[in-house]
Length: 548
Image 1 (tube, rainbow, N blue to C red):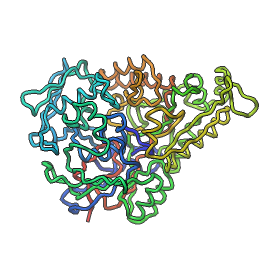
Image 2: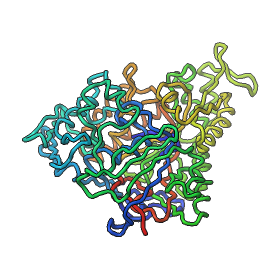
Image 3: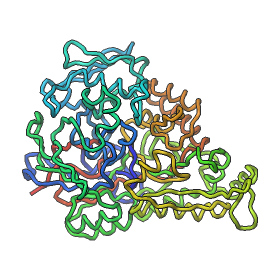
Image 4: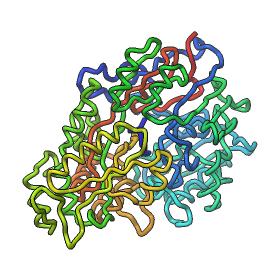
């Protein structure tokens, strides 16, 4: 999973949600599918970003952001592509075959496309898969990784019959093996921890995609990708993709003015209404695996007591927040009561227990019991310290401001003083969330077709300074043990049962409060084809273009 501060943001057809208040389909999306030969040749796709990625290495701790993925997916190999219903198919641009060649032990054999070549002229080989496994499996702390999911389950990665074949042997059965090596980075930048951690900060280094890096203009805050003349697959329809940093709340103006070609509407009713009333803009909807949540910093002095976290959670009416943010959009505004499964996914159930519905009386009683006393209607105190919550949000994101203000009003009822601190959007993750400088925060998790294994790094108990993506910095051995168990379960129904046991424990820890499944709504230039509300699918960048 990757983080998206603006509330987050790939091939199929159909309309996932017509805005009828029902849960969107998990098997359809809305991308204006058009055959390649029917598209206009060339042109520029102008794409808004929330920020220039702080690190273009997706696997590095600072790099696992939605903006990073949007850029690097056009430049890097991936093992599989996914359809609207999350069905995987081998990405034949890079692999001629990927096959489970043994079940006991579990062995997966990757046959690499003979034409697949890095931008520095070296062929893509088994050495690249080997180096990625060694860099990201968590055994070498010198690599500051965001997640070891899946790579830590591999016993070995070796060259097969030639350097164009890699053989992956798992230590134990691993159900989500198709999630691995997407994206794939080159061995030349993965064998050295320093290069892995810092080499990709300024710009992408070695790539292999239908596009290549043109330039990064730090002053103009733009990234330009150009059609790769050395690309061996179907050539890109577009001449260029131009990414431009624009504040989230200003993106609808840029779209309406013809400065960019699409925006991720998310939970922004004003942007939706503006898009619907603007000629030449098409609104596309799907049911994606993305959700909004409040992360609670369990290492904060006032929140280190799980009883305080539980009490504050009981005072937050998550349905009211969902109604306020999602209701006006015409989609499913039912609150989300699961950290792993979305409401339109098989396996979803309410595991929130006592936190499923707000209970002000119980919240007050639990805070009293935890030693936080209150005089009249004032702020609670304990040992001379006030119950003050720093709620850190990014600038230029109205959804975050609205959510924080609603929580501020709710927690005032139980004597908690919520101080909303708005910080620069390009500093939000790197300088606040990643280092734990906040009490509460709100952003989106952008999901994958593998909800169980991709959640592991978010909820795994931190090991010293290594937190992977667990920004709440709380967990338990029981959660870790169940994750270790569930990723080995090959029966989907049994795996879903164990995943829901994990989710119930996450609620007990009050790691975070899920708010709502984030609407997958894209407002786009009506001529933009093969891109839009992707849902569970992956984009094929070389097929994106414009109709005549």
